[in-house]
Length: 459
Image (cartoon, rainbow, N blue to C red):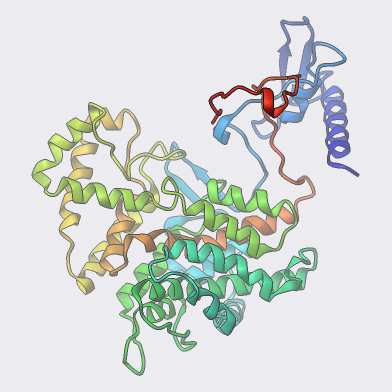
């Protein structure tokens, strides 16, 4: 069946469902009167939403395509049903499979949370031990992957290297495109979780001009990553437990955040039924953007530009006047304090005990205090988000700013996988294909090249 036929079938089904529910039979409906025709339609309301396809029955005539919803940037469009992550932005609540982010960060490891996201329940001790073991023994990558990464320029952005190397994994596991095979899916999930830190660490070492360090299967997930980044001439790298725990918590905090830009990219690309490596590579590419994965870098640059706590009042006045931007505050979803920011603050002291205090911490703390004491910002729901403090930890770990989104990607891999898995098993999902409102010209006469006049090129 062609895409057009599938769309027509979907439209007919949606119209039939709306008609069936339109006679007052649905528990919740919305009455819509089309003032163009005078017709009234009863549209079912389910879970607080209308099905966009139910709008297609609203037409002015036989030749009318039907009503569509126009929603740039998907500000008010639900693209899927998901049981993975719940966010209440007004109340500042974040839950994974029903468990609060506060409980998970306090009691669980990142790999335990990854198991929860992907499998839907917290593991028993035996299940967790098996899960950790399988991931640990798959942390090594094929030697050709290392050769592939060595082909990048010495100053290649590590995020660009990660996009390419994650996508390249699909060529090493050609059976990964058999996404309907449960066992094949399971091994790809293990491989992605296991190899992402290895690829990230290789990208870091390449960027620093240092030899790659192979995984150490005696270390835990975050400690192994620290070792692959920082091991030098010592025979055995021993990560500081405070740094290891702080990094593990950061991975948990970044694990999933419902339908953000990168997760939507994974779902959209994955809807073509491509292998999971290619789908996750799309997520990494989306995270590469400064408005997504690079937001903590912008917050760090802002703190450096302020230079001193005494400059904060002038800076905030500049924000009010539109001369400055308050980075790391506010969020598309949260209209309250981002719960992830509260958790990060608790681990700052432990990191600075090991690595030394950052002068930017005093600026950040005072900036937060003054902003939250000012009605201008609180009335606009501008509270610190996860990016405001995470950059301070990454800087304390000695990471260049180009590595910040890479750290984000490691943690977010579990969420991307969980969302991809849910998408491929959802019978309602089809290949993603948004509609558009065409605004260009129509029915133009073709002009031979000799008769054309120079015109400005449309963007």
